[in-house]
Image 1 (cartoon, rainbow, N blue to C red):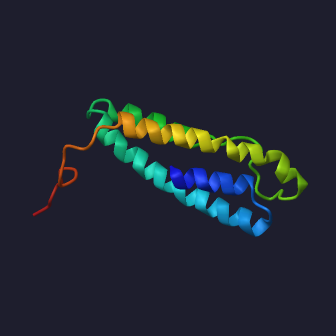
Image 2 (tube, rainbow, N blue to C red):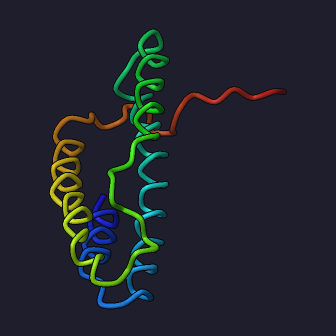
Length: 118
């Protein structure tokens, strides 16, 4: 989440297209990692009966994107939409605090139970 917040701040304050594109790449990689982490949290936070519903809700949220984040418009208009990227910074920090406070430590020292085909 820290990388996601850093990428968002980088997009908001990018002085040129190269920096903006690099920040968007960081934002995309961090967002992809957060999806994987969110799905792994589902296995810890919800029991087997609740997991399908929790996963479906999370997948539904993946299709949302805020308006105005079109990266092709990096000119004076970018200064007007930079605040959209800044919205991610406090949200990511609150999310990080929530994960630390609410997600229990896994009680599986060797990871999830594996199914071996032997």
